[in-house]
Image (cartoon, rainbow, N blue to C red; front, side, top):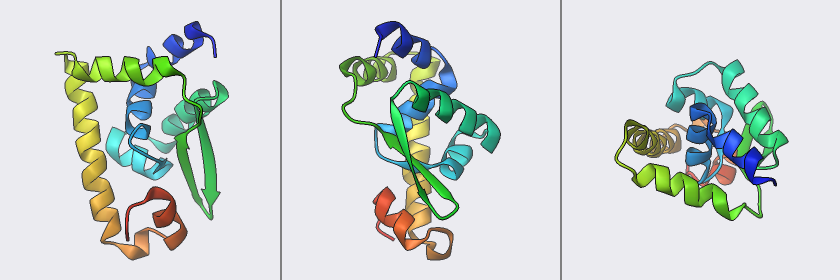
Length: 128
C-alpha cells in the first residue's frame, strides 16, 4: 500500500475511528453504528472505502457482516493510530471514548445471547 493512500484513509475522522476500534478486534456493522452513532449506510460506505485500500476484510455470518483488520498490517497504520491516541487532543479523547464504548458494548452483547448468534460470538471473541 502506498503511504499516501494510508494517510488519505486515516485523515478522515470516521475511518480513523473505525480502524482504532478494529485494532482491538473484529466488529459487526451494527456495533460500529452504536459506538460511532452513525447510520448503517454511512458506516458501510466508510468500511467499503477502507476495504478497497486492503486494510480490512469482512466475513458474513447470516445477516451479520463482521469486519477485521487484514493481515499483514502496514506498520505505519497502528503507529499512527497509537500516536494520535496518545496525543493530548480532542481526537485522542474521542479515540479513547470509542474504545471504552466498544468494551461496554461487547460486555452487554455477551450477556444477551438472543442478540448475538453463536457463530458471531465466536468470531468476535465476546465469550457469550
